[in-house]
Image (cartoon, rainbow, N blue to C red; front, side, top):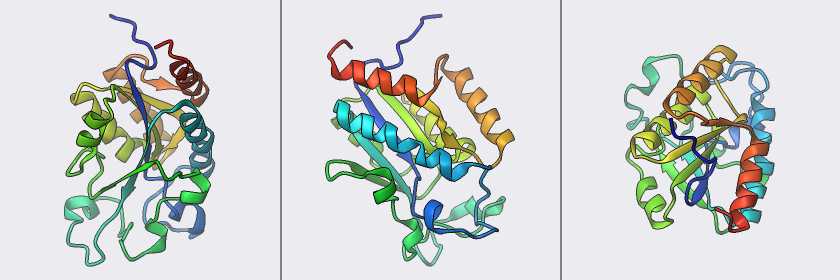
Length: 206
């Protein structure tokens, strides 16, 4: 098996569904279950985003958003999830302040779990000439996992910052990390290793 570098070619940091609700919704019962420590794991993505900014790596924020009348939910509410991420709800906004959003960053709205499904992400990635996707955000077992799988099937090298993702439960989080590692050996990394790789990329070594 070929041992791949953490970053092959040109990278982009994909920040999946780190939205305002994580920081302003203190409900004991949330529309979507979160594993313990979820908020802290989302906050841990900020240094990774700062490192991408400092290394000239494009930062792409993925935003789950649904029309207020619910017409685009499809089968999404058939499982454990309740109504969420409506376009008239301030909790649906990107967590701009907490994540250090900059004017040069990109936002890709999505109606389904995968950031590729029904969006212009593939067009954006091709325009940026990206080869490697660095993933953080939530949920590990839902939107991160399905985005990873679609990225894999589009032949991108995919890497996940395991300390900057969180799932609906600890068990689901761990199972999804194993499933992604199965698809691409070396996919699961720490934020420190991704930060170091981005700094090396900035230095022109890659």
